[in-house]
Length: 120
Length: 110
Image 1 (cartoon, each protein chain N blue to C red):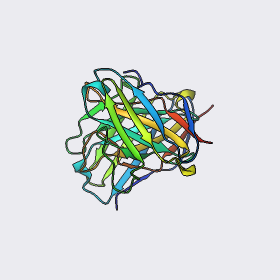
Image 2 (cartoon, each protein chain N blue to C red):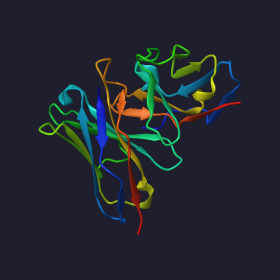
Image 3 (cartoon, one colour):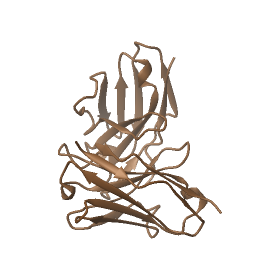
Protein backbone atom coordinates (compact mmCIF):
# COMPACT_ATOMS: atom_id res chain seq x y z
CA UNK A 1 0.00 0.00 0.00
CA UNK A 2 1.35 3.39 -1.02
CA UNK A 3 1.63 5.81 1.90
CA UNK A 4 2.86 9.39 2.14
CA UNK A 5 3.29 10.46 5.76
CA UNK A 6 3.99 14.11 6.43
CA UNK A 7 5.53 15.83 9.44
CA UNK A 8 3.43 17.62 12.01
CA UNK A 9 1.94 21.08 12.25
CA UNK A 10 4.25 24.08 12.53
CA UNK A 11 3.89 27.59 13.92
CA UNK A 12 6.35 30.14 12.58
CA UNK A 13 6.96 33.85 12.86
CA UNK A 14 6.96 36.13 9.82
CA UNK A 15 10.31 36.04 8.06
CA UNK A 16 11.15 32.55 9.29
CA UNK A 17 11.68 29.38 7.28
CA UNK A 18 9.71 26.14 7.52
CA UNK A 19 10.76 22.70 6.31
CA UNK A 20 8.17 19.93 5.95
CA UNK A 21 8.92 16.28 5.32
CA UNK A 22 7.02 13.59 3.42
CA UNK A 23 8.13 9.99 3.98
CA UNK A 24 6.94 7.48 1.41
CA UNK A 25 6.44 3.72 1.51
CA UNK A 26 4.86 1.09 -0.68
CA UNK A 27 6.59 1.99 -3.92
CA UNK A 28 10.03 2.80 -5.29
CA UNK A 29 10.66 6.42 -4.32
CA UNK A 30 12.71 7.20 -7.42
CA UNK A 31 10.01 5.99 -9.84
CA UNK A 32 7.77 9.10 -9.68
CA UNK A 33 8.06 12.84 -9.23
CA UNK A 34 7.06 14.27 -5.86
CA UNK A 35 4.91 17.40 -5.92
CA UNK A 36 3.97 19.93 -3.26
CA UNK A 37 0.60 21.68 -3.15
CA UNK A 38 -0.52 24.62 -1.01
CA UNK A 39 -4.07 25.17 0.24
CA UNK A 40 -4.75 28.34 2.22
CA UNK A 41 -7.73 28.30 4.61
CA UNK A 42 -10.97 28.26 2.63
CA UNK A 43 -9.07 28.53 -0.64
CA UNK A 44 -8.21 26.27 -3.56
CA UNK A 45 -5.25 24.10 -4.41
CA UNK A 46 -2.09 25.71 -5.71
CA UNK A 47 0.76 23.72 -7.24
CA UNK A 48 4.14 24.77 -5.81
CA UNK A 49 6.66 22.56 -7.53
CA UNK A 50 8.12 19.11 -7.98
CA UNK A 51 11.30 17.13 -7.55
CA UNK A 52 12.49 14.13 -9.52
CA UNK A 53 13.92 11.90 -6.76
CA UNK A 54 16.00 10.07 -9.36
CA UNK A 55 18.29 13.01 -10.04
CA UNK A 56 17.09 15.84 -7.79
CA UNK A 57 15.91 17.99 -10.69
CA UNK A 58 13.26 20.50 -9.65
CA UNK A 59 10.61 22.65 -11.31
CA UNK A 60 8.91 25.43 -9.35
CA UNK A 61 5.80 27.51 -9.91
CA UNK A 62 6.62 31.11 -10.75
CA UNK A 63 4.74 32.33 -7.68
CA UNK A 64 7.07 30.47 -5.30
CA UNK A 65 10.31 30.68 -7.28
CA UNK A 66 13.09 32.00 -5.06
CA UNK A 67 11.34 31.13 -1.79
CA UNK A 68 10.75 27.40 -2.12
CA UNK A 69 13.24 24.55 -2.17
CA UNK A 70 12.09 20.98 -2.78
CA UNK A 71 14.51 18.13 -2.20
CA UNK A 72 14.52 14.35 -2.04
CA UNK A 73 16.60 12.05 0.15
CA UNK A 74 16.76 8.63 -1.47
CA UNK A 75 18.51 7.12 1.57
CA UNK A 76 15.38 7.64 3.65
CA UNK A 77 12.71 7.78 0.91
CA UNK A 78 11.73 11.23 2.14
CA UNK A 79 10.91 14.42 0.26
CA UNK A 80 11.19 17.88 1.78
CA UNK A 81 9.67 21.27 1.07
CA UNK A 82 11.32 24.34 2.52
CA UNK A 83 9.59 27.73 2.29
CA UNK A 84 11.47 30.83 3.38
CA UNK A 85 10.64 34.47 4.16
CA UNK A 86 7.31 33.37 5.54
CA UNK A 87 4.42 35.83 5.62
CA UNK A 88 0.87 35.58 6.91
CA UNK A 89 -0.40 34.62 3.46
CA UNK A 90 1.67 31.43 3.68
CA UNK A 91 -0.60 30.12 6.44
CA UNK A 92 -1.94 27.01 4.76
CA UNK A 93 -2.08 23.25 4.62
CA UNK A 94 0.74 21.85 2.52
CA UNK A 95 0.37 18.49 0.80
CA UNK A 96 2.90 16.24 -0.87
CA UNK A 97 1.52 14.21 -3.75
CA UNK A 98 2.87 11.74 -6.25
CA UNK A 99 1.87 9.91 -9.40
CA UNK A 100 1.75 6.21 -10.25
CA UNK A 101 2.38 3.80 -13.09
CA UNK A 102 -0.67 5.32 -14.81
CA UNK A 103 1.37 8.35 -15.73
CA UNK A 104 3.26 11.34 -14.39
CA UNK A 105 0.76 14.12 -15.11
CA UNK A 106 -1.68 13.50 -12.24
CA UNK A 107 -1.54 13.13 -8.46
CA UNK A 108 -2.62 9.62 -7.48
CA UNK A 109 -1.46 9.60 -3.89
CA UNK A 110 -1.48 12.39 -1.31
CA UNK A 111 -0.03 12.94 2.11
CA UNK A 112 -2.34 13.81 4.99
CA UNK A 113 -1.33 17.48 4.87
CA UNK A 114 0.72 19.68 7.19
CA UNK A 115 -0.72 22.89 8.62
CA UNK A 116 1.72 25.77 8.75
CA UNK A 117 0.60 28.82 10.71
CA UNK A 118 2.52 32.06 10.28
CA UNK A 119 1.83 34.47 13.09
CA UNK A 120 3.71 37.01 15.15
CA UNK B 1 0.68 30.58 -15.03
CA UNK B 2 -2.94 31.54 -14.35
CA UNK B 3 -5.31 29.17 -12.61
CA UNK B 4 -7.75 27.25 -14.77
CA UNK B 5 -11.29 28.63 -14.69
CA UNK B 6 -14.04 26.65 -12.96
CA UNK B 7 -17.52 27.73 -11.84
CA UNK B 8 -17.53 28.56 -8.14
CA UNK B 9 -20.52 26.36 -7.45
CA UNK B 10 -22.92 23.88 -9.00
CA UNK B 11 -25.85 22.03 -7.53
CA UNK B 12 -28.15 19.16 -8.35
CA UNK B 13 -30.72 16.86 -6.84
CA UNK B 14 -30.07 13.21 -6.00
CA UNK B 15 -30.22 11.08 -9.12
CA UNK B 16 -29.58 13.98 -11.48
CA UNK B 17 -26.43 14.64 -13.51
CA UNK B 18 -24.19 17.68 -13.26
CA UNK B 19 -21.22 18.90 -15.28
CA UNK B 20 -18.32 21.02 -14.07
CA UNK B 21 -16.27 22.87 -16.65
CA UNK B 22 -12.56 23.71 -16.54
CA UNK B 23 -11.25 26.25 -19.03
CA UNK B 24 -7.60 26.87 -19.77
CA UNK B 25 -5.51 27.72 -22.79
CA UNK B 26 -3.69 25.99 -25.62
CA UNK B 27 -0.63 25.92 -23.32
CA UNK B 28 -2.32 23.66 -20.82
CA UNK B 29 -5.79 22.07 -21.17
CA UNK B 30 -5.96 22.46 -24.94
CA UNK B 31 -2.42 21.36 -25.63
CA UNK B 32 -2.27 18.04 -23.80
CA UNK B 33 -4.52 15.14 -22.84
CA UNK B 34 -3.30 15.47 -19.27
CA UNK B 35 -6.30 16.87 -17.43
CA UNK B 36 -7.16 15.35 -14.07
CA UNK B 37 -9.97 15.89 -11.57
CA UNK B 38 -9.94 15.72 -7.77
CA UNK B 39 -12.66 15.43 -5.14
CA UNK B 40 -12.02 17.00 -1.74
CA UNK B 41 -14.24 16.64 1.30
CA UNK B 42 -13.80 19.14 4.17
CA UNK B 43 -10.66 18.52 6.19
CA UNK B 44 -9.48 15.74 3.89
CA UNK B 45 -6.79 15.39 1.27
CA UNK B 46 -7.90 15.52 -2.37
CA UNK B 47 -8.74 12.25 -4.12
CA UNK B 48 -8.01 11.53 -7.79
CA UNK B 49 -11.25 10.88 -9.71
CA UNK B 50 -10.25 11.24 -13.38
CA UNK B 51 -6.87 11.38 -15.13
CA UNK B 52 -5.72 11.78 -18.73
CA UNK B 53 -9.01 13.62 -19.47
CA UNK B 54 -11.29 10.59 -19.23
CA UNK B 55 -9.65 7.66 -17.44
CA UNK B 56 -10.92 6.46 -14.08
CA UNK B 57 -8.56 5.07 -11.43
CA UNK B 58 -9.42 1.71 -10.00
CA UNK B 59 -12.11 2.02 -7.35
CA UNK B 60 -13.69 5.24 -8.64
CA UNK B 61 -17.37 4.92 -9.49
CA UNK B 62 -18.31 4.87 -13.18
CA UNK B 63 -20.78 7.65 -12.35
CA UNK B 64 -17.78 9.96 -12.80
CA UNK B 65 -16.67 10.71 -16.35
CA UNK B 66 -14.44 13.25 -18.06
CA UNK B 67 -14.14 14.81 -21.48
CA UNK B 68 -12.42 17.65 -23.30
CA UNK B 69 -13.17 19.95 -26.20
CA UNK B 70 -10.59 22.51 -27.22
CA UNK B 71 -9.39 24.43 -24.20
CA UNK B 72 -12.23 23.27 -21.95
CA UNK B 73 -12.40 20.03 -19.99
CA UNK B 74 -15.49 18.76 -18.21
CA UNK B 75 -16.32 16.45 -15.34
CA UNK B 76 -19.75 14.85 -15.35
CA UNK B 77 -21.27 13.13 -12.33
CA UNK B 78 -24.36 11.09 -13.07
CA UNK B 79 -26.84 9.66 -10.59
CA UNK B 80 -25.89 12.25 -7.97
CA UNK B 81 -25.59 10.94 -4.44
CA UNK B 82 -25.36 12.78 -1.14
CA UNK B 83 -21.75 11.67 -0.67
CA UNK B 84 -20.76 13.43 -3.91
CA UNK B 85 -21.15 16.76 -2.14
CA UNK B 86 -17.61 18.11 -2.03
CA UNK B 87 -15.19 20.50 -3.70
CA UNK B 88 -13.88 19.51 -7.12
CA UNK B 89 -10.65 20.68 -8.73
CA UNK B 90 -9.29 20.21 -12.21
CA UNK B 91 -5.58 20.16 -12.97
CA UNK B 92 -3.52 20.20 -16.14
CA UNK B 93 0.00 19.65 -17.29
CA UNK B 94 1.43 22.77 -18.93
CA UNK B 95 3.88 23.66 -21.69
CA UNK B 96 6.41 24.66 -19.00
CA UNK B 97 6.25 21.15 -17.52
CA UNK B 98 4.54 22.67 -14.48
CA UNK B 99 1.06 21.76 -13.26
CA UNK B 100 -1.85 24.13 -12.72
CA UNK B 101 -5.11 23.74 -10.78
CA UNK B 102 -8.51 25.24 -11.32
CA UNK B 103 -10.01 27.50 -8.68
CA UNK B 104 -12.33 24.76 -7.48
CA UNK B 105 -16.08 24.13 -7.65
CA UNK B 106 -18.32 23.49 -4.67
CA UNK B 107 -20.91 20.83 -5.49
CA UNK B 108 -24.08 20.94 -3.43
CA UNK B 109 -26.49 18.00 -3.53
CA UNK B 110 -29.92 19.46 -2.81
